[in-house]
Image (cartoon, rainbow, N blue to C red; front, top):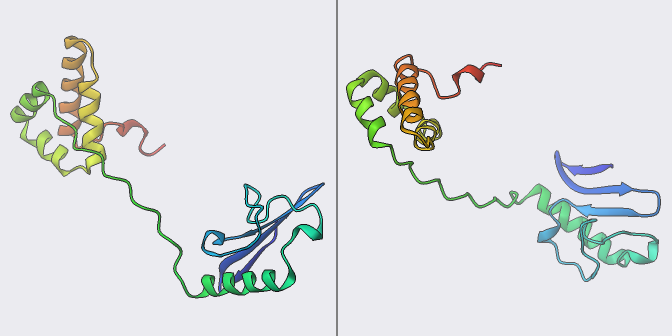
Length: 155
C-alpha cells in the first residue's frame, strides 16, 4: 500500500488487490469530486478498470488540491467528548476518609479518572460487608499513596 506524501504529510494512498485497486485521498472528505462511487474503498470505490477513474483533468485537480491541503491546512480536529460527570462518593467512604486525612489528601490529588476508579469500585459493591472491605482496602492503599490498580502499574 504505497502512500504519497508532501512535507511528511500523507496526500494519497493506493492499494492493490487481486481483482481491483483502491485510491484514497488522506483528507478526501475535504475534496469535491464529481465521481459518484464513494465507499469503504476510498473516494472511488473498488476500481476494476481505468474507465472507473474520473477523467485525467479531474484526477490531476484532486491530487493538486490534496497536496495543497497537506501543505497548508491543519488536519480537522475530532470533537472532544463531554467529560464524564464527577462520581458521587459513597457516604461510608466519605466518613472513612474524614478519619484518614492522608488518604483523603491522596485521593484529592489524583486525576479525576483515578478518583472515579475508587468511587465506582466502592459504590458497585452489592453487599455491605463487601463495601466495608473495599473501603478498608481503599483507605489503606490511599494512605500509602497508591492508585486503585497499583498492582498493575508497572507490569
